[in-house]
Image 1: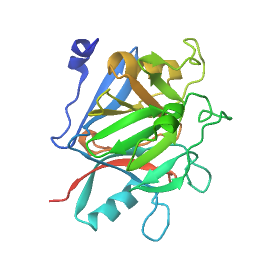
Image 2: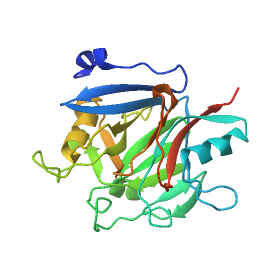
Image 3: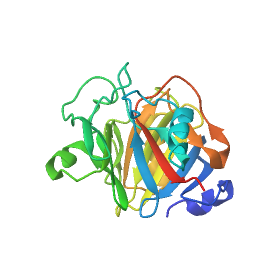
Length: 244
C-alpha cells in the first residue's frame, strides 16, 4: 500500500456495518470514500420501482427499502443517463437487462474509450473494461456501463492530461483484483480526470476504476452524516442492510 500510512491520520471512521466511510485528502484535493467488502455486503443497482417509475432520489429509495424491512447503508449515482433517466449504456438489475452494451466510441465522457462496466456478482464486484466485458461475457447479476475508465490494469486512462483545465466534482468506483474490495469515491471540490484517476491508482491502490459522472455526482453516506439532494438521478448503486 503506497500511501496508506500517510493517509491514516486523515481518516474519519464511519459506523460499523457493511460500509466503512471516511474522508481523505490526496494531492491537495478532498474526497469522501466509502469502502465495501463485496464478499459480505449486499450491493445492488436500482433504477425503477415496481410500477416502472424511476426511483431517482435517495429518500425515495430509502422509503422503498423500508417497506421491505431493509435500510440503505450507502448509495451513489451509478452511471450516465438520458433526459428521461434511462441508462446510456449497459444496465442490468437483478438479472434483467434494460439496456445493451455499447462498444463504439462516441461523444462526451461516456464515449471516451476505453470505458467500462461495474459488474456485481454474488460475493464479488468488478470494474471491467468494455471490450474485455464483450469478450468474456461475465454473468453479472447487476451491471452499469459508464465511462471513461479511470484506471485500467494499474495505468491511468491514456487520454488523461496532467495539465487539463477541465474540472468538475466527480464520482466513481474502483475494485481490487479479486473483486472483494470495492471503493466508491466522490470529490469534495472540482478535480480533473487525471487527479481523480490518481486517487484510485495511487492513494487507494486499486488496479481498475470507473468514472460514474460529474457535476450531478451525489452521495448518501449516513456514516458521514451526508445525504445529497438534487434533481432525480438515473441508476443508483446502494448497499442494503436489514432494518432491525
